Length: 353
Image (cartoon, rainbow, N blue to C red; front, side):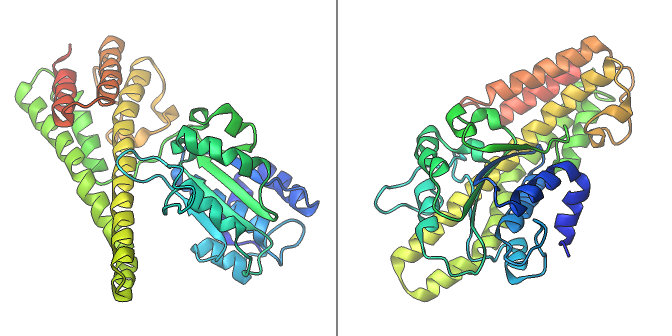
C-alpha cells in the first residue's frame, strides 16, 4: 500500500509516476535525476517519493510498499543510507571540500558516503542535493565523474528550481523531471506584513510621503527580522547535535559542529532573503499583469493581493513599479546598504504617478 505521500504524487503526476514505476519494474531506473520544481516543498517531497521508489526492498509492480522500515525511514529522514547536501554559509553555495579530509557540507564529503559498506537492507543508497544550482563550478566539475560512473546501487537526485544555472555538462548527465506549477510558495517570517505594506504602497500611500515612509519602515523591519528568525530556527535544529558534541568532551569536534551550525544558519537566512526579494518582484510583476488586463483568478500568486486587485493602477504606473523592483534586485547584487535600497524602492513606488 503506497504511503500517503506517494499516493498524493501518484494523483498529481500520474503519467510521470507511471513511467517511473515501469522503469523500476524493468530494472531500468536511471541513476541520476534532475528534479525541477518551482516549489521547495514539492522538491523535497518528490525527492522522498523517488528515494522510496528506488530503495524499497518490498515493493511490487514498481511501487514502494510504504510500510517497510526503509520506506518509513526515508519519509522520516532516518534512513541510514539517505544522504543530503544543502548550500550553507554567507555565499549560500556548495563547495567542493578538501580532497584528503573533506569538511561536512561539501561535495567531497557527500560523495564519500557512497563508498562505505551498505548495512541498511535497502535496494539503493540515495543522495539528494537540494538547491543544486548553488553547486559552484568546481563542485559541479568534480561531480561529473560520479554522475557518469556512480557507485553500484546508487541514486542521485539534484533538486532545483533553476536548472539553467547548472553547467550543461551536469544537466546532460541527468534525467530531467519537470514538476512545474508556475507559481511560487512563500514561507518566511513577516510575509503577511510585507504583503500589507506593498499593497498600501500602490494604494492609499500613493502621493503620501508620510504613509510611504511608514510602509518603507515596515518592509525594512521584515528584512531585518529574517536573519534572527532563520538563526533561531537553525539553532533549535542543531541544539541536539551541539549538546552531543559537548558531551563527547572533544574540543575540535565541538568547534567543528558549532561552525557547521553557524554555516547552516547563514544558509537558512540567505534562502529566506531570496524568498523575500522574490515576493517583492512577483508582487510587482503581477501588479503589471493586473493592470494589463489579466484576470485576477489567473494570477499565479493571488495571495499577494489579499483584498483583491488594487484600484486605479494604470499599465504605465505598474510598469514603473516593476522597473523599480528589477532595479532593486540588481542593486542588491552589489555591496550596498540594503535598508537604504529597500527604502528607496518603497518610497519611490508610492511617489510615482
